[in-house]
Length: 492
Ligand SMILES: *Cc1c(COP(=O)(O)O)cnc(C)c1O
Image 1 (cartoon, helix red, strand yellow):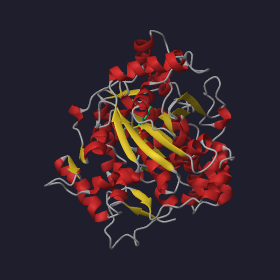
Image 2 (cartoon, rainbow, N blue to C red):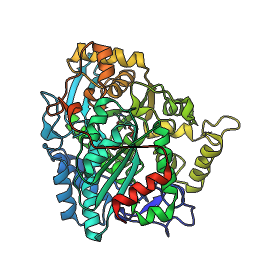
Image 3 (cartoon, rainbow, N blue to C red):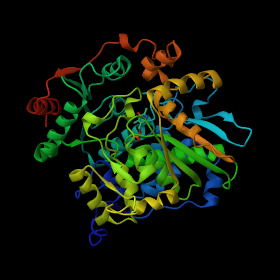
Image 4 (cartoon, rainbow, N blue to C red):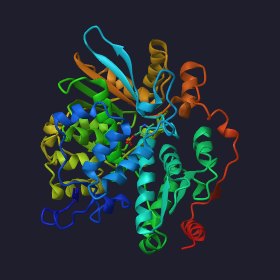
């Protein structure tokens, strides 16, 4: 399996192609594009039938081997077996089997043949779906680094979910350190405790005196110093990482196969979306031949994606125009994985994709509506890829959390509430609608308390995490100090 950049010039596409292991530890391609397979591997009906019975780990192996063709199969099988266990994904609700890793729960079957199902993706160590991919990444990194006798220092900024998922995936891993910046005193008490209570010597929590953008700017400044980056062996695990996207493809297959008994049955997915990483994996599963009917992107008040899927206009927001909402992990002004879909939408034309995303930098967006003066008319092809969208507000979120608690007796988190709200608007007779549960309610308790007047239940082991001793340093947003801190701790 060869990988190409979404911005590769037509003439350069074949010469610049790379294998899975080559792009595993990298971020963007050198031309600024994102990596995608040169062609999507296809699944047959016979394969789907055979896969219906597999464990999650075995299914993950079957799918990953189509993408990671340069990793020996026995090694890959060992990696998926080690990653997807009921001990790692142990935070299942009562009535759900942890051994299923992403158990399904039927919420409602309508008289008219509609069906609403929740797929739990947040039973891992940090109670958000990011663990699904990040846990695999931790094991893949450790495996690859050991083979090359190399080390990797992961450097990033987080406002919550990504940073903690990365730390829990990399803690105690040989050859890896994590330097994670977060805005000082800006994360929820639960999120802070989750990260800062890690005592592992390879985890470095750095609280930056400022807001998230200050922390993010420091990551950019340090990463732009290429000699420093090379010397300190700095890498990232942000949402454009290809291995993360592939790992997410697996649960679309699991969801479809668990919800159906034959491949003629129709299933749609609604995905609470921010950086378009999660739903991009659904797009890839569909392109591989998984019979997904619709892929519905649910956004919060930050509705950049909903606007595109309604109008064909992609208009990124400035940081000042980005709302701070009660589903904060979707407060995204510019969806970093969107370029992968656009590349397919414009017929895998790298020159065209490059021009469109250069226009995002220079003019804040592009317009594919086909109207006079627009940049193209490919919006008319969007339906062919199954995409739909919808939007949810704070008021909707509170109402949905209440409704779901009343009607189905479970408490859902704020992001999943956005998903359920939009899914309900897109139910169709004869089509099972699966909503991806992207976090557990305990992580966003402040809003649960507002909606229900009582605290969200905490999974076992999380009862008193705020009382645990915390390990972190506080630093001003000073790039030179940051570099000195990293160098002192890597010894490189
Ligand atoms: C990251 C995250 C999302 C958004 O996922 P994307 O892949 O960025 O679209 C939604 N909900 C939760 C809880 C998250 O942590």
